[in-house]
Amino acid sequence: MIDYHIHTDHSTDASGTIAEYCQRALQIGLKEICFTNHCELDPQRNDSFIRFNGEPETLSNRGLTKLQEEVFQARERFSTNGLSVKFGIEVGYYPGMEKELNRVMDGLSLDFVIGAIHCLDHICIDSSRECDRYYDDHDVTQYVTEYMDAVSSLIRSRLFDSLAHVDVHKKYGRNRYGQNIDNVPRDLIAGVFGLMKEHGIAMEINTAGMRFMNEFYPAPALMEIAREHHLEYITIGSDSHQPADLGKDLDLAIDYLKSFDFHTIYRFDNRQPSGISI
Ligand SMILES: [Zn+2]
Ligand SMILES: [Zn+2]
Image 1 (spheres, rainbow, N blue to C red):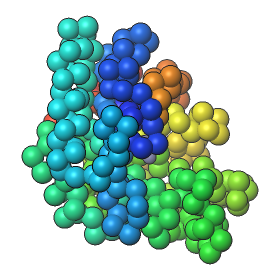
Image 2: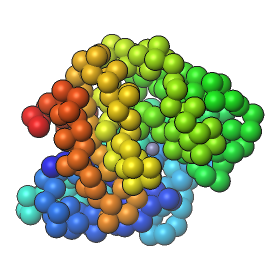
Image 3: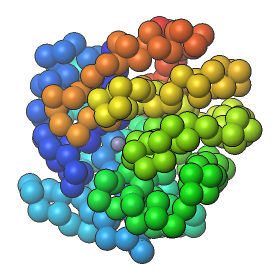
Image 4: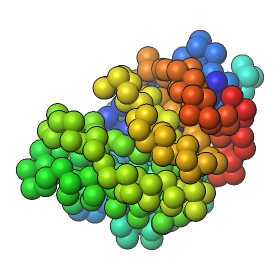
């Protein structure tokens, strides 16, 4: 099994060192893990940090290079145990970020780059502390439309290998808007999956939804539409923010994929996908 969405204590909202995650991976029998710490760059927000030894520093090319070195050391150390360690990041997308992202990624040897929509109008809708500030000014239709529009821009940017948690808007949106959050116009979702197919970006099965709301990202209704689009690339990840969550429910994610006629997941080397039959 592989896990392609992991946050270490370099992310300010996560705990566990790289070595602790690697040891946990060996314990639970994972063959390959890809570290994907947060890379938030929005100049209008105050969350552009990376942490070393408990001290947050402003995210920069220098910091990511330092992180890369730590991942490479773990790669070397744990390869003797048969664990493959990959270097990735999870980038919070906002329109117009291309230049800044290229600047911080310059010279890095990334295996895998995930794109995510965490913010709308520079407010984090993936944060219980912030989301109401956005929800207070938006009805459910505006919210879902703006979220899916942002996802579409992310895909069109062609900056990313995989799209994280495609329906994460439901996480706090369901508390606020009730079941209406699930009535996303079919055309809107079909448009997103059509773009994914066209641009060759992977769809992630993210098991964090299972821990939070007993439902994978994406939900079954979205998986149906994904199936109709015959998406080629699929990645899987626990989105763990602590070593105890590493690899969680990935076996269920595989069954889930198969039930929607997906039979290949993808791993990445130097941002090149290769398929694994499931
Ligand atoms: Zn995310
Ligand atoms: Zn994540």
